[in-house]
Length: 361
Image 1: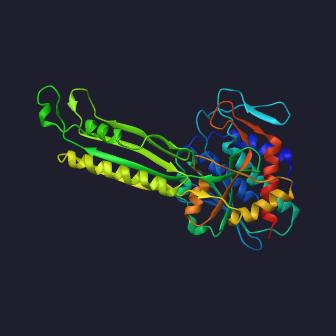
Image 2: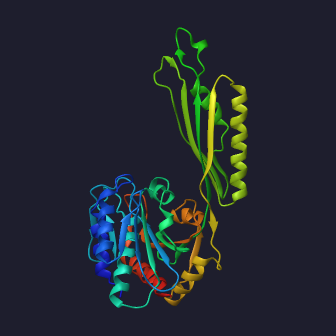
Image 3: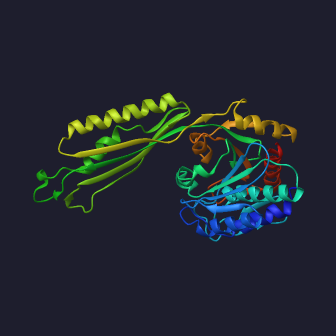
């Protein structure tokens, strides 16, 4: 049986371990230890993601969360008055995103094992670097996973709050190499990479194009000193849309623009890499993940509430690997802010939902 006090204590224990993106070693070791002590085969893959497996009967189910947090996330001091809401002290985030998801996974496994009921084989994937571009999921060792459905515990709100649609996401890196020269003595000998970069950036997709399509130039950097013609410039950005054809059209237009700038500046070297960061999806009632989880929610008195979101999660990456991921809420609100808080009964409900999915053999 899911135990409120136990899941709450696991959450508070995990929050006490600082794990900003890129500094997850301590919490990875703690999670691997906890899973091993529960009797699972647990290990870290080459990217440092924590993976584990528990034998069972029937089709395996992947339970997923991420271990990293955004900043400011060091020295978190939870404020809890014994009621249903946990907050930070206002100087940091709380870390419900996504220590709450990690705590749910630990509680579900412990409850299933204690009850001794028949259950599916369970695979666990707790990723690093989710908050900085789904890095861990992108580098995960999928050869060790056999699940075709994943429950990704990484959304705000109650467990009935489901990410029903997520965008197709493209990113790009553009490197411009010009030629340096002294800006005061012989600027005519230089090929100014930053100026060429500005010309490129000005023609790249930026802003909102419609309710489901956006573009952004996120970084442009070049030059070393004010009195030298800069010979290097780097541009990084993204494009995303719920509609694959729309984002691919933006990518095509961006490529054409870069090619035109290349023709305008034959003395410069311009290398552009446009690539898919992750595929989008639209959840339907007949999706394998929805077919598993929607009946579970309804049996527990919760109506699935799928809504579109503008960002990606590990669930997007899983779908690109042939795993139907469904992203559900675990009781967190005001994510990525110092006003973040966790509704404890909703985290408990999330564990009840996930456990019921594991028990559907």
